[in-house]
Every structure is written in structure tokens, then in C-alpha cells.
Image (cartoon, rainbow, N blue to C red; front, side):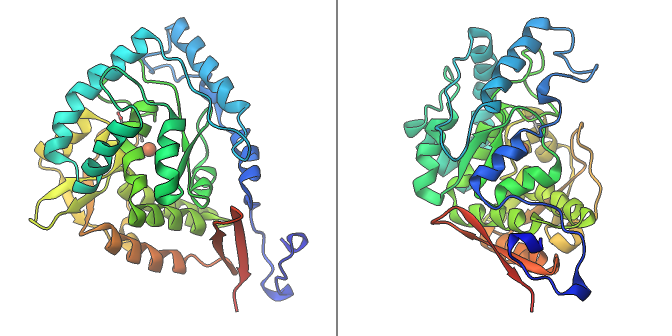
Length: 327
Ligand code: NLE
Ligand code: FE2
């Protein structure tokens, strides 16, 4: 840490994990992706499908060679089978969204239909989504080739960068998959990054994760899970609507959140951060906020409680992380 220009007092000197300071540093993180989608678990529906595995490799290669500081995200030419899987999900999800997705999501989804090629017969390209998002909130989606550790994934968010997959789920399981895929990233995550409060909320989690201890990373990742992935919003009419991407991208998860009498708790990061959750099955508990501004304020307090001996902020002109030593 000292070599990077921070004077940590001898007495408070403790080990701090390396963390990215520039967009270029994110390239090093991408090279650390786990398995690059190569080793699918044996119970994955694509496990025995050689063509599917080959295709996952092909798409992973594109992310490997991509440099976030220099390039535009390359377009993928999706196959007919891939587009058919997308259509099947799109056609069932969009009417469900009309009923159960939060207002802000629906609003930017409409715009993305016009500007980013969201259609039943087209899988939108990350680059087209970025052209829409960047002027709105400075957020962008960049491709990764496989799973990142929770630390690395959250670190990207500090830069207003969302690490995104580009492959699509296996055609045999359209309505629920435990893995992120392009349906999850685009139908789930992309639209809300156009909302300034939601964008700030997401970045706060990222900034707090830079150089955080392992237990703090776990707490931040849990907050992320219960909000960005599975959060609900109580709208002004008192009805709870969905904003979490893991719900919005899955027909089964929406139905579970709406019809299965699942529990909903008020999102307090200090409480939510300690609660365990399943990652390969439907959620038993969802957490709600009144609005993104409120969620952002609460996350701000939580982030301030993650002490590391320094605080971080983002310089959006130079796309760099600034580090200030605690006084
Ligand atoms: N279960 C979600 C879906 O099927 O779209 C993906 C969740 C990824 C965290
Ligand atoms: Fe996600």
C-alpha cells in the first residue's frame, strides 16, 4: 500500500488486498475469471452438450482479449437457437414485468426498446446498451469470460462498470438458471443502471469493497445479493414491485416472489448483511426499500461502517480511484 503513495501509520499498518485503481487494472481482474465457463458443473444442463460447451468457449475468448480502457465491446453474432431461447423468455417475461416490475425499470426498458434493440427476435448487444447508459449515468457493461470472485465482481462496480456475461443459458432451461447469462444481464440488470440513484447505490457497494477485509466482502456481497439481485421496491400505492435482476430475468423467480407467499423484510443493510441465502434455488426471503434514494442513504451508512484505514472515491473525469487515509 505504501508503495502506491499512501502513508499508513506504522501502528495501524495491516495487510490490505490489492485493488484496481484504473480501468486498465480491470483487465488484470478479467484474466482471473474462474474456469472461463469451460468446466461446467456435472448437473448443468449444458454439461453433455458439446456444441453448447464449444460455443461458451468461443464467446469467452472474446471477453479475454477485450480491453475495457481501449475497445468498444465486440458484437456477438447469435445463432438461431440462441435467439429462439431469448424470444421464448422475452415473450413470457415482458407481460410479467408489466404487472410486477418497478416503475423505473419499465420506464427505461421502454427507452431501451427504442435505442438498444430490445426485441423478441433480437438479443441486444452490450455496446448498444452502453451507448444508451453512458450519457445517462456513466455506467457501462463490459464482457467477462467466466465467474469472478465476489471481491473482484464488486470491485468493478466502483468504476461504474458492470461485469457482464455474453453467452446465453442452455435452451433446455429457459425460465430459471442459477448462472448469470445474457438474458439475466440484459433483461435483469441493464435497464436500472440508467437510474441515477440506483447507479450510485451500486457504485457505493463497489467503492466500499476496494481493499476490504474478507468478512466485509462477504457482508457487502450479501447486501448486493438482497438488493441489486433480488430487491423489491414499495411504490407509492403501497404495492411491492420487483427491481432485483435475479427476479426480473427469471419467470420462476418472479412467480415465486409474487405467488408463493414468500417473506418480505425491510432492507436494512446492517441486518440483511448477516443473512444466508441459497444461490442455486428460489429465494425464501426478499428485502424491500421505499425507493432507491432511501436504499442509497442506508447503503452509504453501511459503507461508512466498513473501515479499512482509508476511504475511496471515484474520479469520474479520469476514471480513477482516489484513496484518502482516515484521520
Ligand atoms: N435465476 C436467474 C435467472 O434464471 O435468470 C439468474 C440469477 C443469477 C444470479
Ligand atoms: Fe446478476
